[in-house]
Image (cartoon, rainbow, N blue to C red):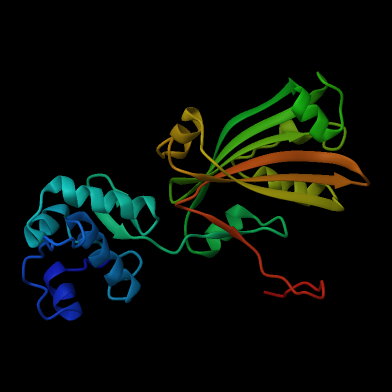
Length: 267
């Protein structure tokens, strides 16, 4: 059960004069919306408000800061875009948990990572089909243009919130049973790792803006940035798959830790 961080108590702990109405220094002090952002971010940074705590309501912030609802909304919107809080329509705003991190040097199970944090994982299968390869896809898979390839699109969610849009192409000669799988039960990468032995892997990360359709699926604004992880795998120099995984930048990060001597870390 989440706790509600009461504004007067939290502000009093942070500042004995916190009950006074904040003002903007006419000589150039911070804008009111920035003061609200700093107040909320400061309580989160100092640990007074924990992950999952409910923030004071917009009405509470309006009354305490003596500003308009539009000003409060702007502050909360920017904190949401920065990944500091999450907003639930009709319920309120909550302190966000640290953004989950996906490993760059191995193929990690997204479903397993999400469940290990005590959250619910689900996969919405948008497409599983056999299509003719475009020039770009054919080149990535070492095939000729127009060759038959498997194509899948899946939307991965954490607690019902989209965290990854996966767009994958698979070489049928390497994975002939790919299109017969139920990817709502086992995500494509887990199936491929379990059934196909790969000996080479390539990861490329780009910062991109999503298309209108991609943004709609990921439940984000088109102008918000995404992290795009493109992965290719091979077996004995023969390409197996190319997949593009799009993550909302405010909800996910990519990173790795490794030994400089090339030995694997155990944790």
